[in-house]
Image (spheres, rainbow, N blue to C red):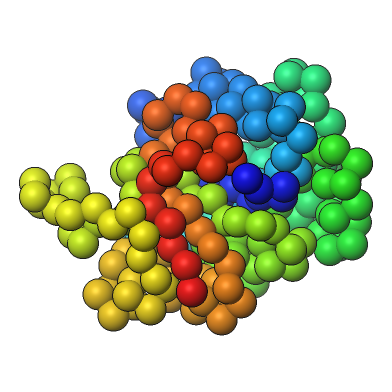
Length: 234
C-alpha cells in the first residue's frame, strides 16, 4: 500500500512498562516489527521522541528556561535513536542515524538528499534531535521530515487505537473516528498532535494514520492497507 513511510515513535514507547529509560525487550519488539515491514520492500524512516528521558514542557522543566529544556529534550532523542539503530542492526538491517544537531562523532548530519539516498539503498533512517530548533515538537519534526523525503504516509504510533472525540481512558463512551480531517481535529481541539504539525500536514496533503503501537503486527497491517486505527487527511 505504501512504498515509503515515516514512523513517529514517542520516547515513552521505548520505555516499556517502566515508563522511564530504555527497555531492551520493548526496543527489540518494536524493531522486530520494523524489520518485518522492511522485508516487504518498504522504505522506512523513523522519527523518535525523547520523553522517556526528559520532557521539556512538563514538571521536569518547570523552573528551566524553555530553550535550555528543549535542547535537553533534543539530546534525549539522540540517545533513543542510537538504541534503535543498535537493535535494528541486530536484525541484520543497515541503519543510519541522522541528527538535526551536529554531532559528527556519533551520527550523520541531516541532509535531505542523503537521507533519501539511504532509503533508496534499503537502509532504515532514524531522524533525531527533532528539527534542531527549540519550541518545535518531535511531532512537527515528523511532519516536516515526511514531506521533505516525500513519504507516502505518516504513521503515528500511540497508546490508543485511533482518534476519539474524547480521551477514551477517561470517557468510557468516547467515539472513535475511522476517518477525520485535519480541520476537524483543529475545530474540535483534539490532542492528536500539536497544531504546527497538524497545519503542516493539512497544507501539504500528507495523510496520517494513528494506531496502537502495543498491538503486535499493527505496523505491518497498516502498510498492507488494512483498516487499522484512524486515517487523517487534508
